[in-house]
Amino acid sequence: MAKIRVYPYKQGSASAKTLAEALGAKVLKLNNSKYVPRQGDLVINWGSSDVKDFGPARILNKDVKKAQCKLESFKAFKEADIRAPRFFTDVKDIPDEAYPIICRTKLRGHSGDGIVVAETKDQLVAAPLYTQYVKKKDEYRVHVLRDKTFFIQRKARKLDVENPNWKIRNLEGGFVFVEVDGGNVPNDVLDLAVWAVDALGLDFGGVDVMWNENEGKAYVLEVNTACGLEERTAEKYKQAFCDFIEG
Image (tube, rainbow, N blue to C red):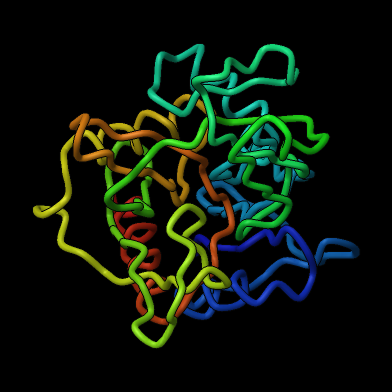
């Protein structure tokens, strides 16, 4: 009988465990694993940049290195002609009209880690990547498997937070994810999410996309290869992976 295994980015990953439990699968040990892959098995790489060879088993997201590096991601988006914020690696290249600028001091940070907002040139800090801030009405996380979207969330303000950070919409800034119906999401948001996953050579991912209503355009920010999972999100991933296996 074919088996499903989840390969975690670190041993003890809570999200990898949640996914495995939803699938009725097991989380693989990163070292000294006794798992023997067989033809028909499916290994889901949950955010690891160092995936081992599993022989005859199929692997989803075999290489996530490009997705995990924000600079490499932006380069891939540009090469694939996928709309994303303008980016710079040298402060000398940032034009005056580009501000505010998001200084990304960490190329592999998450949840807003390593982000500094520079409203003016004097506020810039040393960073390997700078991106132009794009105004947005909404910011979404679109979960994609191959060429299909299967779950959509929007970042919504927590009503008990008095001064939310509208530029950086994360938990610390006073925002949480809420489920939304795909029929109420602009098609450009959904299309960019699918294209971004493909541009990074991934099979699946949670794509952060923002929507600028004035322009009528979406902009992709990044693709998460091991996003946080709550019960509802894990159930959606279970359904998507099971549909993939049966298909």
